[in-house]
Length: 338
Image 1 (spheres, rainbow, N blue to C red):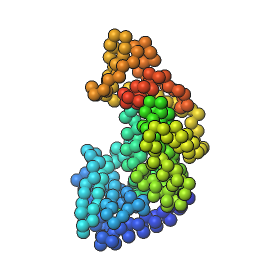
Image 2 (cartoon, rainbow, N blue to C red):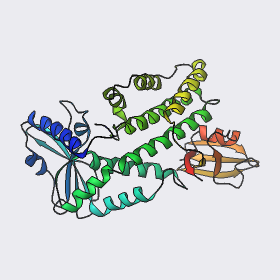
Image 3 (cartoon, helix red, strand yellow):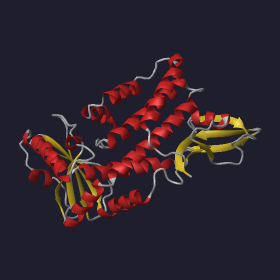
Image 4 (cartoon, helix red, strand yellow):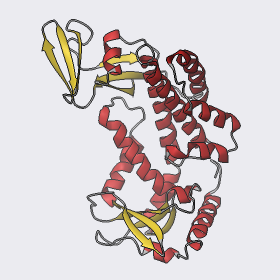
């Protein structure tokens, strides 16, 4: 699958993958479609998707089936079915929430002008959901919803590449902030930054399945030797603090390399209290306590005084007190576009 593959070629590839999976289990497409529950109305669109359709499945893989139904569905937990001993997991999506997610992804830039702790999880969920519809093979659907699925295919790569570009920068800034305080954590974060940059790289070359556990397989399928070497390096951080400075420099340079072409001039870092963080005045200090499980003290007249948010450029050095609070996991950091 390449970024320039025609719809016909992609459809043929998906057909072959599904037919091979079903033939090995003596299943038919009709049997797969029959597993979609109609309690929430007759399905508007049903697609076979997941790792099998992305080409990463194995003999033990389940077949994911995503279906849009007219009524609201209270949960997107998979409904499991066993047919001829084969595992099929059906996920139902209400039509209105699906269209709301699509409108939000289409209308919103990433990074946004303002971001908060819950926004990352929400966007990740939306990307995972809609990209699976885009990647999947339609088994049934109304003309309107089949056209919608085809439209997704032309939009999703941009959403995914922008997501990973921002994640790479966010993790890279996090690593630099951790470095003087928790070097091993800094190395882990820098490795994660490189993973994200490589995911963007793979997506730009046609491997845009939105599941990070397959990154190595994506690069192998692209026959990207340099990418695989970078992936191994990102996955093997140093075991002692002595090796961290050189690791951060080497991996950081690779992150920058794989983010070539990303225009981050208007990006900034926003730092805010993490979920569950409360603040208390205590004498000449201010206490930051998260979930009542940890408490960090900083001078009351320092950079935290009277503020609930701090903003830095992506290459700026943070105030010591703010960096220390972030390292103790009572502050959260995101990327915004100014």
